Image (cartoon, rainbow, N blue to C red; front, top):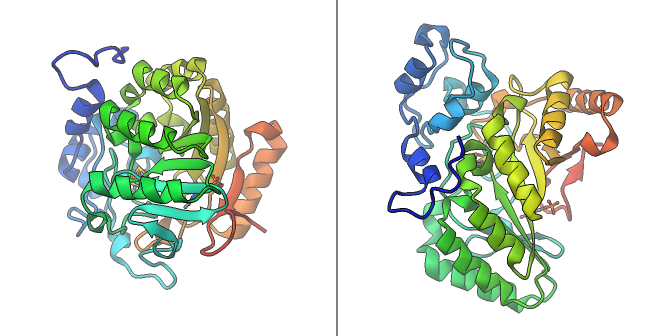
Amino acid sequence: MNTKCKNHGAQPPAWRRERLDAFTRVDDLLAFLDLDRTRIPDLDDEPESFGLRVPRTFAERMRPGDPEDPLLRQVLPLIAERQPVAGYVADPVGDAAAERAPGLLVKYAGRALLMVTGACAVHCRYCFRRHFPYQDLGPSQSRLERALDEIARDPSLTEVVLSGGDPLMLGDDRLDALIQGLEHIGHLVRLRLHSRLAVVSPARLTTRLATRLTSGRLTSLLVIHANHPHELDDSVRSALLDWRTTGVTLLNQSVLLRGVNDRVEILAELSERLFACGVLPYYLHGLDPVAGSAHFQVGDAEAKRLLDGMRARLPGYLVPRLVREIPGAPAKQPFE
Ligand SMILES: *Cc1c(COP(=O)(O)O)cnc(C)c1O
Ligand code: SF4
């Protein structure tokens, strides 16, 4: 069903309704998937913070009755998350040290990353910002103004990455106002959006927003976040292909996750599927050692073996860059 044009009536847009329709209780999700909880002995019903959040649109792409489903694995809280593991910390990538203004990170030459909101459509258990103190960021409007002032003061910046949380959680009007603010900063040339919502709720990829992006002064890129080919169903594909025809450059970043996508066949299929959606693979991130995520870690030797396997099967442009973030490094680092 094409829901993209329902954005102008009195109803909230489809993607907002989908957000309200998310599963937030483990039991509801399991019932929807026809899964008996005894089949998931290590389930954590009530994670202390960072609760379950799974939009129905995402749950519909899971295989009913399969406790090992790779999409379910990404969102299901497990007891293992509570287990402290040496080296797994709250801020594994040195975000705090790179903060120039609340929610504005500058780590790499020419690029500033702006956390537009702390909200996400889905809660990914491996998220490296799962412990980020978003609540300390302060009221959003004055904070964003301050971030824009900081960006304006630094002529070396040419690109702004809107991130979060998920920047597409903002409505079109607020995004439009923010983009206008960025367009006024003469030294900026590119605007990048990092969004998982694009995959989880493709209704968010409205034609109106794509047109806004491509008619603006800055060249726009959308970097989506999909980890497994099953995430890219036909609703996602048609929304992405529409965006591509408007001229937004589309890239994908994935995280390498044990039990989700740590097989060559799956990673190769993901690349093929991305291409069919008009998207090129960009990064395959090694898992950042964030507290609560150790059970997703894939060893370095295994990660390199997987990448070699992809190289042996795929054209070069379908092989993502396998990288990790080292606090203080001038770029994301390839695996040695
Ligand atoms: C990942 C990241 C970027 C973007 O890096 P690219 O290599 O250009 O994709 C920019 N700023 C911060 C703080 C980042 O973490
Ligand atoms: S959508 Fe992105 S920021 Fe939000 S929980 Fe998932 S990985 Fe983290």
